[in-house]
Image (cartoon, rainbow, N blue to C red; front, top):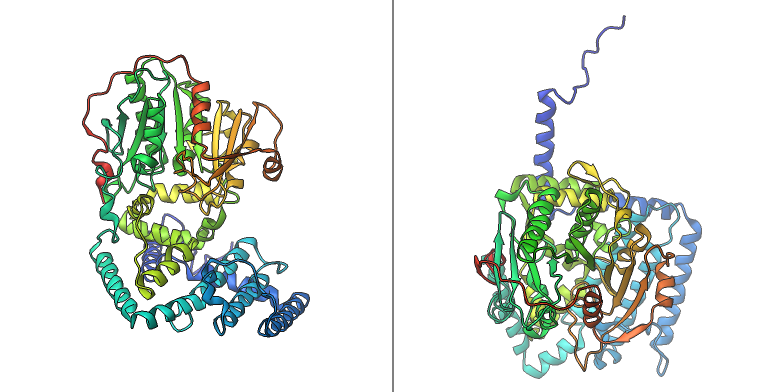
Length: 576
């Protein structure tokens, strides 16, 4: 009989293991504070994977060397008089005419050549894991954006011209702007200009009442604006990572007001901005206290009426999960489902997936275990990195170097009104949805039992946006593959937010494609769908409204208004 080991491996129930795990958690939480919850290990692993495989790829090295020589030759020709641009791809950073004069033209062309070279260098290296390739390419773009000549006051002709013309007054204004922004950030105040768009005054002013309040939501019922209404009410389910009033901005931009004006009875969920007390709220809580509690209240006010439910972003994902669970359990309260920029398959989540791997999540989870939630600043920072030029560098140049404040609008003010996320919910959806893709794989549990998106058979309307960095439209489109329902899919110009806030306007330059796949119809892959879907000028809102009307009964008198706990927009939306 062998002698026992003098140093036995500890088991999971040994107290020393708990102490070790707690120490590891503390170390990761400290690292998260120092790095903004960005994992250095994830970056190092990606860089090593890329560099090691590039070192073992002589063909790729030769191709990159040849590209560098070709670029040098092109730049030499470019700097000769009367030659066409060597790197003429449009770039918003260099669209000012002054960039076409030397030496600025040479600088911007050299920068564009570097950008082209690094794009080639970080893509197509055999053997590199896809996630690592994406992370290295993204990191290279971030460094290039940082070093762009447009960000340097001595290399940006617009800044130089303004400084000479104004005798440096632009830089003084920029310093004032920077000091104001730094002071506001330090005090937790909203960015400059947001005071023009106060919730309940300039935005979120469609008349209504809070008819339900629980620990997680306020439910708003909007007052009718027409003598008769479609009998089936519309329930809007926004994402809990945003304030609901993106759907009720100014009167001209409010989807809620538009629906009410078209004879729909509209309800909207307003999520509580979570804090330490909500740290253990998970997906089942958001389903029970959110979607199902709202449906119960809606049907109490509109008895015997089925509900058109529409979810936005992760609110749409929550709706899909809830609808699949309802189909599993024989709950037939829904008349249709609509998904705005909402993913149900997370195998290709777009650039947001750059921040989601085991190394990243270990830091986030450790930090959230201490705080109880993900801060609004961390969420905003991640989205800023995805659109660094639009949300960071262009603002720096305009506000601080040119001394001109970018005019604030309602959508920008809403975007600055960020929310927190409870630790358990954030961990659950990052792991189960993004990392493991449990929803599309049929493993996602609701009430302890898995659900299947294949059980979704309700008429469905979906909206994808062309330039979405959060929910790429090809990923949104995958519900066609996952369920047999009738799906009307609209692909609209714009991004994740501006594509949804898309009111009808006679002078709108927006357009959308629209195509319906019948129930049990053949699957069209995204590129095939794009080739088949006709283009329509203007907003997609009228198309959706007509789709809802076609699936509703004959108009009736408006339902009674619920006993108001408060006037819209309620109190939860005001929590910071």
